[in-house]
Length: 333
Image (tube, rainbow, N blue to C red; front, side, top):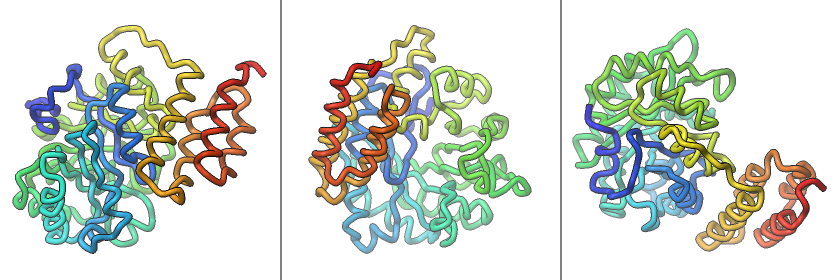
């Protein structure tokens, strides 16, 4: 099997281990500033936040901002959602016109469980219509000379687990690789990810399969790789407030000791994230940073009260000041 890294990062020149580590596309989370930090920490490949194909076609300002890709993260994956094959293919062509070589892959979201997405027939709702899903993949793959990947789930619910059949369909339709989250749509993010279904899909198709679900540590990433023989590992919630997880995973995969960042180092990255984010956004967008700041401080001594204040912060400067002052506070007081 051709290594996944050769498909999604052609001629990238970046150093990587035997198996690539990817940052999952997450709405409201994987902004450009966060993606750059993750790359610095050892992430091999990143994706934009989930982007509406329809929004791009209508030149929606907020949607256009979501596909901004900086030089440090090229090539980057763009994840689209929608359910109209022709519209999605048109959007793929448009993305290439806008970004060209900046894009390493276009990923079609067929796994988002959010009601506002599935209610429109997008995201994981497409797992209930494999014929339409296959037409989407085929139409996009034929229209652009760029890898088309698909991210989906175990199935819609426990009564309709079809990830393996869906994987076969994606391969036959022209997908370059697939990513499987081992939960059903109805599970949302509860319970435990089913790695067995990922392993079954790996055995059923010849295209690379990326494993996703419950990757919260380097140890978990190694177990996922060993359990499934997946071609790549994708971290999602495990990276929230913890971009350092990529260095931890890389160390675990290479069998070397990992030294976690100090409290001060974590806070320094959090402050930098705020500053880099605001350098690209207007002040009104700062509210998205409050959850990031809260995640960065999780588990730190005395952070419970800090997170309450973070959630009431009225501007980015106030947010940064809170973290700066917290950094100066003794760890045990």
